[in-house]
Amino acid sequence: MRFPITARAEPIEAMTDSDIIVTTTPANQPILNAAWLLPGQHITAMGWDAEHKNEIDTIAIARADLYVADSLRQTRVLGELHYATVTDAHAWRRRKRPDRA
Image 1: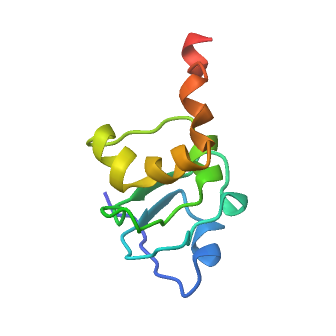
Image 2: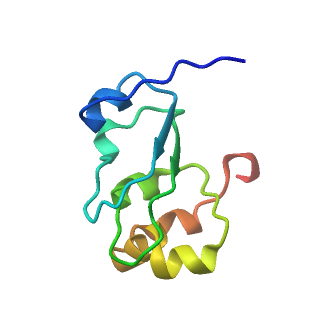
């Protein structure tokens, strides 16, 4: 299987026509904005491995239908859930999954 891979200068350019978005940055401010996301997009954020890093805004995390982490404990301390918890964007945890509503 072959997939086209394209690098763009600005994150919004990449997000407007992509089904899969992968980040691996040392960003300490969000580079992906929830307003740019389209329904059905998949995001893999690999750059969140320290408390000061922050690639995705917390609204995007709150809107996620599914969140998968290799270590929830680690992401609560060092990653995206750290910021989501601090800003109360973790309300998604209380939502029922669509297939269990």
